[in-house]
Image (cartoon, rainbow, N blue to C red; front, side, top):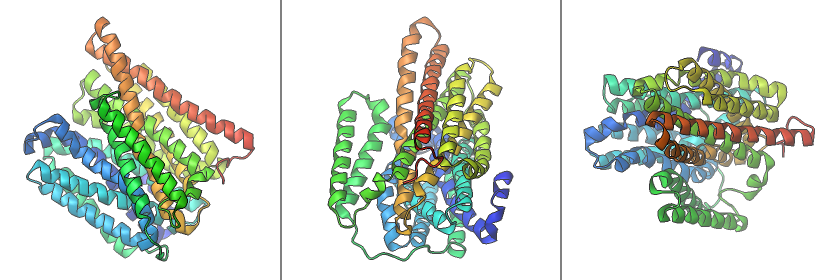
Length: 476
């Protein structure tokens, strides 16, 4: 953490305060998704959730509105003011965090979690747009995005560790009270150091586009999130994903005809945006999926407790911080395209090396391979977001911020795909070995697949780089 903050020294005092505020909001939303996961069993016992599937909605109720509403709030921030919407988002998130901490019933907790998800959809694109506007394109912005990417990844890791510590020593309600405290500090920073970065635009909101985009993304993420439990070939999953394709297709048709579209198609046609989002989908899908599989490995194969499992991610968290510092220098020296190639290659190498994870012991292998994966992932994320947000008009930064955040949620398809591979391979091995070894065999297969997909992404980036003869092959 110290090394990363030292890397922001040249941003100036005000720049550092702005960065701490905006990154604090990003860290808070990342923390929210992971800190609650470890606490789910205790929440179920305390509030009396009737089923395990119902308990899973404590996590899903926050995720779905965030993914569905992010494009809407990205465009709304350009219309009503980014700072204003950012402050509203943080205030709403903070209030619902307190409500979640005090919730006496499952229904009220789920409502509060949904409220947090709506607020996170306001925070994500506005924080990124405020950051790109506060720091000029070039080394300062890249350094800021590096810190932001590192803290987002660290939020997930610390959430896992903190969730275990809190539920072991206190109770699950403190997970939400911590978010309330962080939110209060971010609100203070937003009012005192963050300034508005654009004039409000007088434009009609694209209501049909907003409805179609929100409904399409909601059904897409819902279908991906529930596909494993409902069955990928089941009627529910097929109908949900088909409905998502129809809704998102209709959204593109509407956007092509609307005078003030929610997401201008000229942005989606830009190579910077198109390739940046594709790369983001690859790195988030494969790293997110492998991280979940590591949790399964530590608990189901090694027998780790939730707290020990959280501590097992320290290598990945530390590497994320280091990568956030290195990313700006590497992009400055080699360009975004070369950084993407390096990042995906390192991520692929670390993930494939997880095939050497043993059935017993192996802590050093676990820490080193997960650290390599996390290091490459953050390098790639910073370079991809830099690519998406570079060269755009100031008026489009809010929308660009929402597009840059989308791979985080749609990347859940990678999680679903890898867990399906584990399940299939484990079932095939079950008759000939023990349960733990069958699970380990399934995990090894999925790690190889995740690494190969990341490597293919690096190869595609490298081919495009060589064809254009420039390190900035993603430039529009």
